[in-house]
Image (tube, rainbow, N blue to C red; front, side, top):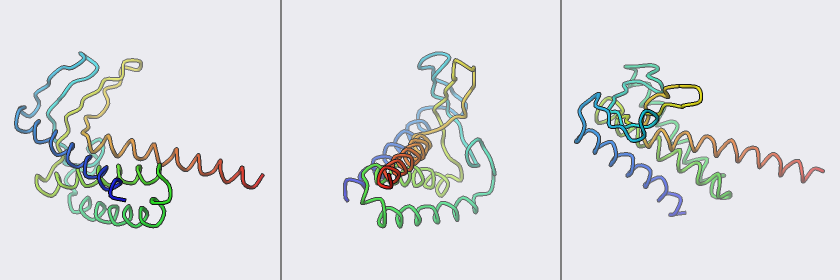
Length: 158
């Protein structure tokens, strides 16, 4: 079980380290190209949720995040320990939620810095961070878990 919590701790640590490096070494709005024009570091702050939604509603984020963290922990201890994919997914979710929660508590905003341009459709994806990436990967893995679980259930019925 400690390995699962280590995943969450690794996400929180990596998230906070990268955000600290961005704040310490880059001016707000500064861009460092990595693979021009598709990938760059861009020092940005977000006072809302994904894509800047609900900007300035910090009290809502505090409440929602605490409820989500409690739900993740409950679900991990009741279901996640039984299935490796689900357990890992939940710990990625936990790490991402805590990483952004720390920013909101201490800074009143979330530090974002990964800027991606999707070349095929020329879509400038919203700027994100390690916690956001972990949250996204976690949701994809949870959907994958549900699909796999449903297929297993259908096989048992057949």
